[in-house]
Image (cartoon, rainbow, N blue to C red; front, side, top):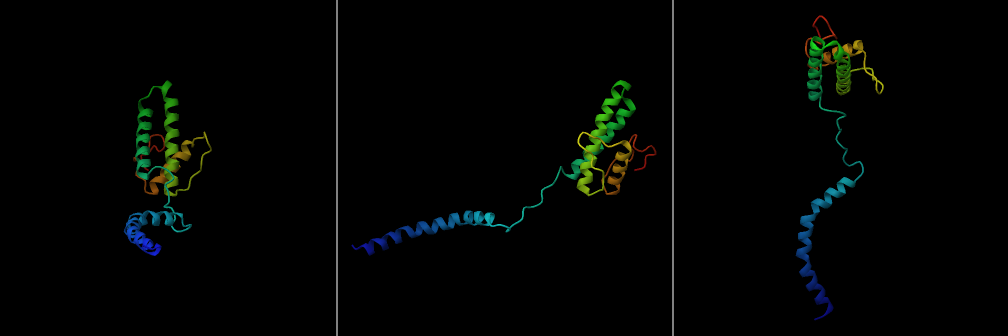
Length: 145
C-alpha cells in the first residue's frame, strides 16, 4: 500500500465526520461572525427607565396616598410624610415626562420640584395622554386636571 492510497483512505474516513461537524457547528460560527461584523446590526434601543404603565400606576398610587395624608394625618407626622410623598411624586413625574418627551425642568440632585412646578408637570403629563386621577389633592383645588 502506497502513501497515496493511505491518504485516500484517510480522506474517505474523515470526510463524513467533517461534513457532520460543518452541519452541526456552522450556525454557531455564522452567529459569531455576524456578531463580530462591525455595523452589521445595530442594538435595539434600550428603555431609559421603567415602562410607562408602571410609571402611571406609581403616580396614581402616590397621588392617592398624598390625598389620604392631607385629609387624615396628624400635624406632627404630616409635614415629613407629605414631603417624602411629594418628592416621590416629583421623581416619578420627571421619569414619565422623559418617557413621553414632555418638556420639564430637570431638578438637580437632592432637589425636589415645587408644588407649582409639580402641578404644572402633572397637568402637562395628562395632556400628553397619561391617565391620572381627576383630583390631585393640593395641586388643584377645583378637581379639574
